[in-house]
Image (tube, rainbow, N blue to C red):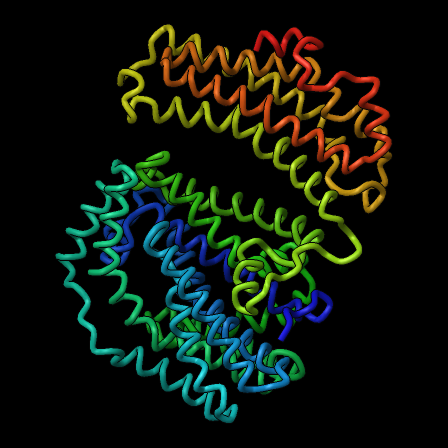
Length: 539
């Protein structure tokens, strides 16, 4: 078996996956990242403001459980696609066994070390349970899926979930630990919470999740998602009617699955093409793991400590903005590479061999390295160093014991003013340089001449203004903290930049532009030549 070629992908499924992942992110932000899941289950997380109550009601009625159901449905359809492409059924089942075991391992790492709102572990288990059903006729698979959904609603597995007063106690303790605890304290607490609360919850949802996956498998096998367009309008109307009625009457069985099917039918009918959403869906695993890492840092005590302190409206706005960034990045990435980073790892482990990452005929490894380095340095590393790190340090300094609590001192204020000046200068530099960043190999899409990029692009700017911004930043940080440890970190960063990062950039640019860059370098001193740069020597 081989990974599906880009031209052979069925775009509507990727679009649906991208939409479902957005819904999952919104639900996770409002009910698991922002507050304790058990505060949400017991209803003690109700927002006080009208906007928050409105957003929570919309997410609860239209997105919560529906997005997860849709994602599970698409997971089952994906399994059916892989089986259709296999020339040997037994070999395909062995492949799926490896694939789901790898997913289970990724999920357990995510669950135990990053965030216990994980769904990957559940998907890995359900995938393993899905394999025996693959030999059944399509009709029996659909019946089995429906039965499992009904069993989950009316009885489920014989697992006792903690009582309400226990959940209240757990929510209160979670609010304290996640908001103010250190990494080790949160890690130990998360393991205990996972064992006592999360695992029973996952097992209780397993039958329904497996049932929805089986319906997705049966839908693909019966050509319902591809060749039966005449059935999509009635499916949309009937599913929406049942789902809206079930939501109004608070009947979960008649709300979650029908509304998810209505969303799927609407996308299949009306959104045949949405490149950004499709890219986000194609990199769903990478985007999902990235969301966990970023928002755990934002909300947990070892990061910004905003757990329980951010309202529904700002949390939802942050989620929408972050997902838009993820969609744009996914689109940019997939134009150059075949898979997202996590997808590449998962596929390589599943197929038992390293998968080619670069797209054929578009990039060489040196071009890809130069592009990735340019983008990372100018769009990620520089803003993070100049903007994100000072803000985080100033916000968390009192919590970590680096500064006195209360109002900032005169020295603190002077340091922050210097940092602000550095940021203002950096914004000016980036605005002037962004139009000249070498985002891709010469003449592939942009049609810009390499000589223009290297002569008037960011590397012309770094000869003077960026170093002024560096001086302001480091002086500001040293003034703000007045800490020998901070000065040592600054010195180590300067050595790292001058001895490792900048020479690596030089080599990447030489590989990227070839003779044109070498000719340019003859006229411009090396960035690491301190004698040619008094400002750099001063830094």
